[in-house]
Image (cartoon, rainbow, N blue to C red; front, side):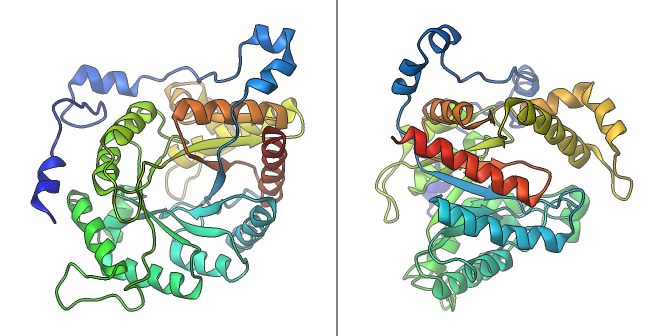
Length: 389
């Protein structure tokens, strides 16, 4: 890796990441303090007295995409989830969404996208034009060469349709991390690994006498994923698009986007900054149904986050946890959530795009079953159509 880039990725004294080990104890505590849900709707007075003016003042909607976690619902099998991912991508293609991404998670009983490249291949074979990719591949879990070969194969079979989003977290717990044979220090070489991977997918490898086949010359577009200031700085220095995980880690969203835009350096892949921001979607035909669905999502998060191994939490246990500090943690994760029927979704998404200074929104649709997520896609599509009139 270029030594200048390594040096510039050292901690910047002018930028403090409150979640980093080097931050002061007060800053780390402040970063962990739960915040009230962000209200991004127009003022209640204007909305009440002149709703037609509220509609006219909304900015034009940015492109919307989807992060599909291949969720396994309470009454669903893993096969139901994977088949549902195909249905979801097909419907997203019909409705005009820009792309669908899948995330690498391991040892989570409710998420079936662990073999991310395999799932992308399956969905790509059943769709025609929508872009598909990873949101993301946790690169420290893998050899850059293997990822280049996997995504080079995908890009060769499905030209101009494949994205490669990259993260540096393990995507799992410490025990599973050991089962993956992941070196605990692997994240420290993430910048070098990104550049090595980029070389394999480009025209000139950075490792003498080692090439990716398939992969070489496919130029699969890379995206840096992050939830802290590190990813923002890296994406800016490498001239890559930046996707912020505000759908579960909202704290640093605005500062990270500001730093990325200020420090962006054009590259062969991208000549101007491009920001994607994650936002949760809890969509329903009525506000009452949406509120019920939100409580279901809070309970599901509590079970996923605080359940242990073969002793999962039941609904009663989850509800008790949500009354305490764990509930505040769950609500923090849901800070950026568009909830309700199409008019409410439209207002929230338009304001969130402006709040996040985003060029594209990655929507994460929450429902207890595949059919509910398909309906969520349709409701947001209705909101998009109205916003663009």
